[in-house]
Image (cartoon, rainbow, N blue to C red; front, side):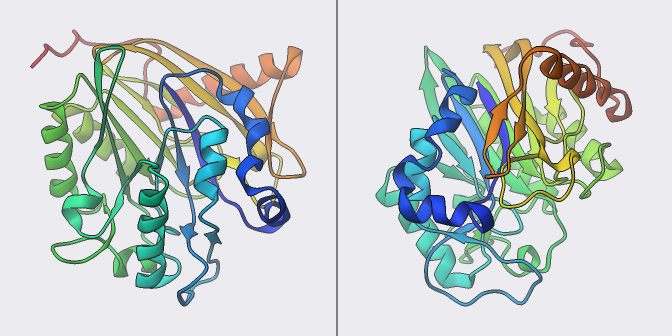
Length: 313
């Protein structure tokens, strides 16, 4: 499996998506490689309608963003984030319709809580995989558009019991359970206490892999017991560069068998001036891998599993 961070299509990326939307991300394909399943966070509403929410930054992309992601090798997106409903109920409906019309799997966003918390289920090489998405960013839009009974929106990780129930249910359906979260504090390389507490809870109810984004920079990755946790994968396809640390990125490749992460590899990259990640090579790649591994220290994670593997259900 491959995991990468936040994808955003505005700013310096707008022209690329306007002129050649279906191939806008084709150059990212080699970085994502040949994983059986690739997941990113799509941090935008997918609509050309609706009214922008009253907030500092709002984002939207054309429906062809799903075509671009498919060309790049992405199989599933999480839209459980603080920009997935930036253009209100109309934008929410358009986002869901665009994904459905293109047969593109998304998690963390739905017409109600049952849909938003539902996993994407797929069987690959005989392995039953469940991918769920949820948001833990205290944004006013997320507060207004948290999915509930008869209410569309994002799967809110602040409704911890609901999220844990969804993960426990997915555990009964899948050999490998993945939870993709939007969480943490912007511009911080160490996870917050809230992140660490939720990661432990998710591990306890059966999550095999927990990955996340939102900090706009990389955070530590490693094992929490038998669960592999990557607290922050940073920006990936991004609309602007604020600092050198904000353009440091990469792809997390995990080799998994029956829920057990057998190998974890980080492929470092740097977002160039066009907003597209480019893989690092030679000494630059070596330094980036060392720096990424060093982030594990403040994350409280181990470099190997630290308890016997969970027995199969």
